[in-house]
Image (cartoon, rainbow, N blue to C red; front, side):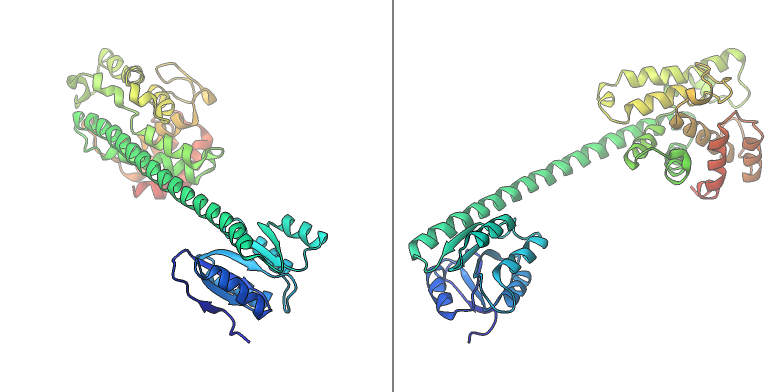
Length: 359
């Protein structure tokens, strides 16, 4: 008896073929036909044949399978291969003298490539098997090429996304420098916005992709300040009524600026960015600007960025004020001294504020 997994090497590197047959004579016939083209692996029954498949699945190019065998018959092997989702990757051929209608119907239902009756005709079985093996090989090569192209496109897309994000961050940071900030403000707004939407119920209904776009958009909330004169933007004292009106215009100026950047309009974060730039100074009680939106008329992303902006402004030093202590800042937000916010948003904010403070 042959030792299980008997291995016969060929002179050509075309992959390995597994022959599963309990009759050594049948094995010898098939091995003589195919050994010039494939490395041959042999198993003498269905059970060891299945083990051989699982142990060599990455190098097998085909399986020749008998039906009537001890331990496990050919149809049982086919069922196991189907459950393991291997029949789409490795072509299986039944080489059998038991090609009854029922066997053929069940074998084709399970996914066998071909059924070849015994005794085999060498040139016929060689052609039928090799035609299918070549087809599978070509399909795999095509699949590999498509996968490489897909990965290349993904890599290019990631580079473009990274470049776009870098340009957006650079623009926002440049505006922060104009107002004598370090640029950390926009990065904290980004992280605070993402954290509230990702870790509280206020972000329910938003996908992780939506939240990522909103967080990216949040860093452009003050982009309109580029149109505000330095004399107002950097003024250390209280603004006059006229100066405050000019300062308030950064919301509409921001939306207008974003509208004028065609490349940005193609970015999926654009709609969020425009809405946030325009509406991050609206108030839940309707007393904000520029449109006096009230309650749920204000998008949840504009509401979150508004609160994030106020919170960060309170706990950090500004050209016009010193930094408030954490306790003072939270009390001012809670008491409504820095604007009117959605009560549910405030509830969510205070639940995660300990995380936010460490940003």
